Image (cartoon, rainbow, N blue to C red; front, side, top):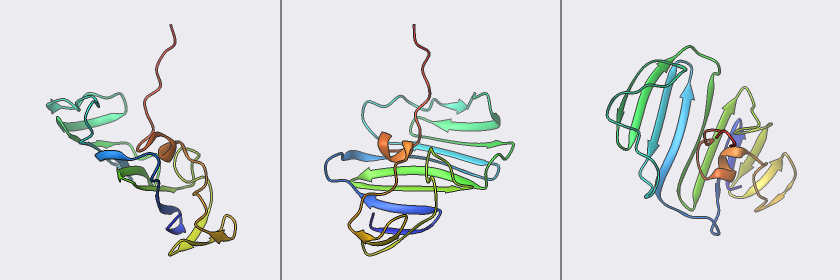
Length: 136
């Protein structure tokens, strides 16, 4: 983990690089999804139709929408070897607990130098949490 402050962190992963960028974020009632990674599905064009959205607009590489607030902030993003995650209140999907690090020197959740970030689904997937698929 390179930098972290309470509910957000940034890190580098040279073993799992995304070509271009992808991410998603939710802040109060605003929702955003971005993806320029080859092989990922398009966000569509026009009005975004998702269950939890009040309204939304989409382009092939991005989507913006409004929804009933469920969190203050949560999100994850990746670009090349850099990954970011934030979550308040804390969430297993993004940041499970308090974190603190400066210039790769970490003091929470454990002390050390160049320690990996706490496990989170967002970083494990290289961006926002993927949609769940029904097993057949």
